[in-house]
Length: 101
Image 1 (spheres, rainbow, N blue to C red):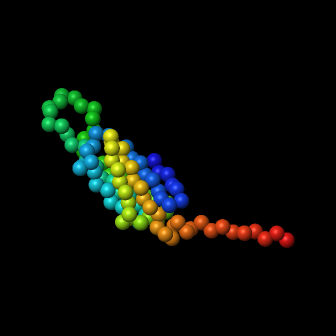
Image 2: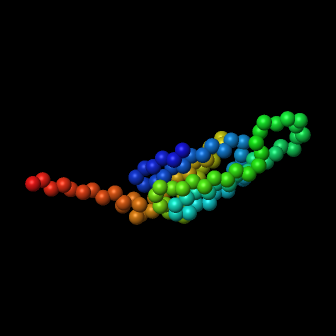
Image 3: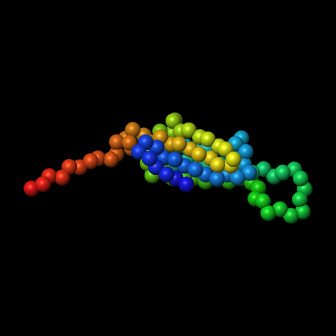
């Protein structure tokens, strides 16, 4: 889920069954790359419907962000990223006055 406020983009990803130490996040000015790995449990199981292995996703962003100011929170398999917009993006909206004749 990606939402936007005047000052930041907010990205929320679901990563169930993955520990925080197994998640890598790379942020550029216009994209977020998430690499995660769900490791196989040591138990031998004759049949499993769980997916184990690496997960990688690149999410393009609609606004340029300050990648040095990103905040991350990971709890109960949910990753929340707060991606502050660059100053140029914050000032992108321009109000135009219409003149009446």
